[in-house]
Image (cartoon, rainbow, N blue to C red):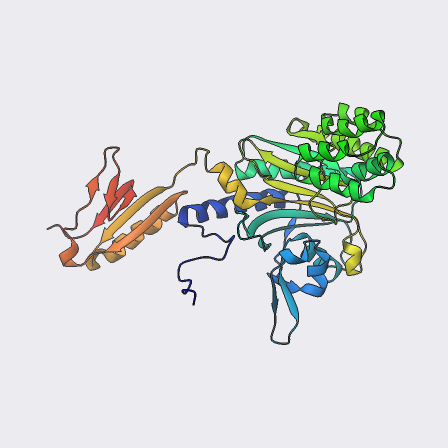
Length: 402
């Protein structure tokens, strides 16, 4: 018999202690405020959705969904992303609202991982969806907003890599005719940044020297606007060419926003969700190996809910952002302890209210009995106070002198 799990958490789940929770809420508040100033309205959707609708449409592998049954035996899922629930809302509750629709959100999402994978199963995301606009300007808007949101969250050094799934689809169809399994294997390698595996697969194929070199060389297609010209010289496929031209237009709009310094074009980019149909992007912070934001265009998702419309969006990985900004210098709140007795309660609580009206001041009050009045607190070397294991910048006493 296995022992009861009293203190253990399910694999992939995490506790956020008080300081991390405060930081999480601050990031959430700053980012949502930034999104609101760009015209995005926040909505909240249920944690649980029906498997037959949102679950199947989410493009999350079935084995990675958390499923449960309600009392009627209907299969539910814990949401694995926010894009699909918002597509449901836009197609139902907001079906009379004219396009374009701009929505923002903050939520936790769930994906079941292998027990030994060392990855989280619960993620916190803050993001937006721009529905009903197919233009490059819409794609550029969400990229520019992602940059503004990362800055609002306190991420100081980062880079946004943008690509287009249409380029890889068209390019591989042109170069690897009749080899769909090989095409998919190469895309999987690119998705997981397995460039060694990518080259190994190509070396096993009977390709002409020129074709082999061309397919190898897409690993070098990273940089600024010049990448578009390089890519156009490598393909004659209409889908690939249209995809590159779309990316070039996005780049020009980002230049108009004045944020292109944060962006690079990476034509090896491929979104990790099947519903992506166009531009995709990921944001990486300096010194952090995992993306802190990701997004892209998904023009086919909403038709599954009966309201076909183009759409684009992104999400910040809020819990990963906490890992990044933890190394930054943060303004620490001023902590004040007010010690009082019953006789001076009104005076003490009025004093606490005045302090709490100040910005970034945390106030704790403590009622002492007559016997506790002599309870000691000590002053630290840097001029602060230590009382019952907590450090305060100031201690105010509202008690009878003894």
